[in-house]
Image 1 (cartoon, rainbow, N blue to C red):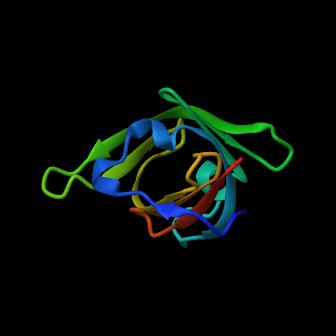
Image 2: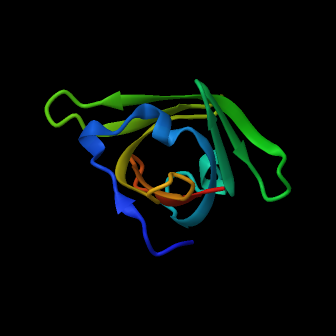
Length: 121
């Protein structure tokens, strides 16, 4: 991945910047749910309103929905993931993009304590 990635202001983040296919580059698991679909996924596909968590063989571990929510005070973006087995919120802690938008890195911190670093596929 290119070294030239720019930080995006999360308070002004367009929701469509989060859509697309993301590879899980790194993950720090929590002890609460290490077997959940999000904890096992190697790829997340976020299309309008639809979430697919994929395993290494590209088979779907789980399908559900996602949405962007913002807190009232600071307008920080949260991703709300709804899967059959779980419903979780993840704070978007950082989004970096190349000037042309082809490369991105997304950092998420889940309410459960799991942290995930994603890279655009």
